Length: 553
RNA sequence: UGGGGGAUCGUCUAAUGGCAGGACAGCAGCCUUUGGAGCUGCGUAUCGAGGUUCAAAUCCUUGUCCCCCAGCCA
Image (cartoon, rainbow, N blue to C red; front, side):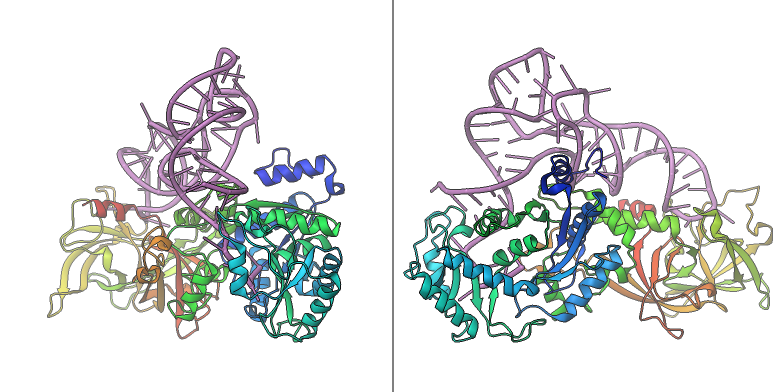
């Protein structure tokens, strides 16, 4: 059951707890999202850790929505979150919970704390509470309402629940220590009044528990043994423990780890929401978003994301992982699994002068050199082809070994051709390339000379028009968060739409199907794709050695 | 001059007193009908200074730097 050598400090702690029979050897974790936005790759780290550890140690992981703030939460998010977790590859079975299901129990426990003199109704305003809290370096002052009688507190709290008081007029606070160095212990608010409709409990409640009051108790109710969360809750652990100790209920262990950060993107829910609301991107599932729905639409696989999370590890260190690390994971998987096809992004007409105009040959093309079981397909070849604009250069550098005047190049799976003429328009733009082909080189190399370059192509008569959406990082700089105005730094080329052609085998490609467009990148069929308008999203480019050579010059 | 946490190649991460290793990125080469993939090689990385020890990334002392906390958000 337990790993012989746990991979990280959390797994080590869990293994130790099992060894010492703490919690009766059981392992129960939970993933506690607030339904106020879509899940992103940072959440994937938490999901993989919470569900992964439960799985590895033969335990369970609960999915519990932390829905204690009706003003920010929506059913849409509840549904999207469940969909994304399943897609990532995890299953909570019947262990779907909501903090809002515990509101009655939480209320009863709050009454218990009042009765024990550990909580009180405070009439201070939000602003006054802030003033009384003190500062980081100065202790706070006790509220004048702090020493009300138990009876008065009970009465007031019941009337808070009954809806007798307006929003913000009163709170229930834990009576702890206004001089604590840890601000969380300076009489934290347990309940606030919010006459708001909750997406699950409707208008049943007008007081709502705060995170700290809800979270640990929810963990306890569910029998969670290991409550894993991010580093910023380290300061909350003493409070987490305090509530549980006061209540003398089952006491889970909270363990904190560092959240995931990735270069060239933003990860805070607030900023992602802004990108969506201000139409900077096309929605939560815009392929440029670091959301799971965005990555899915971009063509990332669940396994590649899990692999990525595995590789970056779990520690308490501040981290900023290069996005290249994520890209490496999807490239590695797709290299193994994606069928190769030919697709031209920016078409340039090529005419083979000595090839008969009425002739069409079907050429054999290997589907995946990394997977012999993938077989091969037939690709039509004819006199007029589309090639990539970037595969022709009128004045090539020495290291360029694709097409240029007088130069020879191989057409993938077809013939070696030689450029004999260049046709230009009135503006001097190259609009057509004329070549001759060497009939003896059909899928075979000439013996008398070495052909260095191979380019891809699509038969003009057979090619299928396709829209290609070429994505790059949303932000050009590694740390957009540190810029003065982060939104001013969106990469203008983060989405480029081009109209190209793909080989006819892709005519019926299904939504979600992934391909390698040879020499270009990995693409996935977008949901926008129809038989009339085929749309491919570029998931990631191939590693581009030529691009590096070019840059150096 | 409050409380909490963290410092290991460019990045992420291993080591739990015993050869500082891996992945990504980068560089050089080989190979190649994808300038893909693959293969080979390339590293003054333990925050500083003292100390303990045969031996320190690890233990002790001390200093420095970074992150988080003053929502009736989570």
